[in-house]
Image (cartoon, one colour):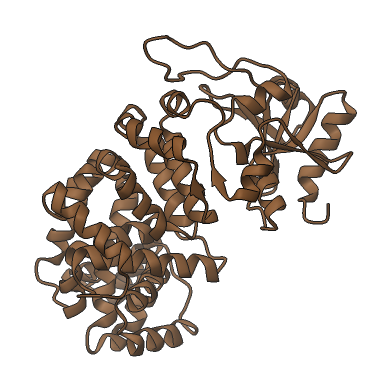
Length: 428
């Protein structure tokens, strides 16, 4: 019980006191059973979202396709969902478009995706409630769907990405029928919205096992359907997939700056960073890591000519298709351009200009990933890390412009308000 979040316990106990059933559920129960530290704690209850909202003033209802309640404790969210039963589906297409039909705790367990996620923890008896043999699969280190795997993946194709995520993160194997169904249903991933697929990609990248996750996406055939335009940046789909798989399976071999090897080198470096720190990795760093392989030699040589245009072209070709937010794409571009300035000879003299940018810290994180991935550049990284420890806090860009304008008026300076071409170049 000591490993359970006290705020999650408060939510469960208040629901129980109000006469509802309530359990900890899903990933937190799985991780506690495995002796891992849960990232968050979810709750399942017989109370409807509206009843949860009435019980907790610090809550709000979210979702349409899957309505639930978020209970807030500062910045922490305890996700609280109502027991559900299997929704009504079309015989022609089992894709779930709404999932708000209430049921019992056993109904709720049997409509979940994988056996290892279908476990409930009763805080009063301090025992796991298992309707789906999830504990046996945890002991066997196995990913298995609850019920028919083909139907489960067709109901919600994002479950295939989640299967890959759990297999990679937990170092589990796939139950044979589940893996066979995943190979068969992989093309259905295109039925999911770009936003949901992109969010799952971010989860893969932030989970500490992105390298293995991307390898499994390639093996399962999901990669070409999820990220077809991205795959084509490496060449024709067939040879590109083969080269990426070879790079994934033979780490540390060959040319580290070859695009496919640089991708998996950066994914491996990202995993080590996530596992060793508690820092949140923002989308800009993730995009920089994903798009760096296409301009790897230019980044290594410090060649800035046409680099900005090349990055924009590469990001634009993929970003619009997979739904990258323009703001995140721009931050990724800024990080890649700042990387050039960090490794250029004489860059130290521009320390105040660089260290004052909002993206400086993230560019420094990316530089660390780069050095880890290709095995050189340690001197530049150590120098900038040392200088950054005494650097002034970043100032928002709008405040910088106002300060420059005021300074120019006091001096009677006739230069443009943004400081002229040199200052604008520094923004890249």
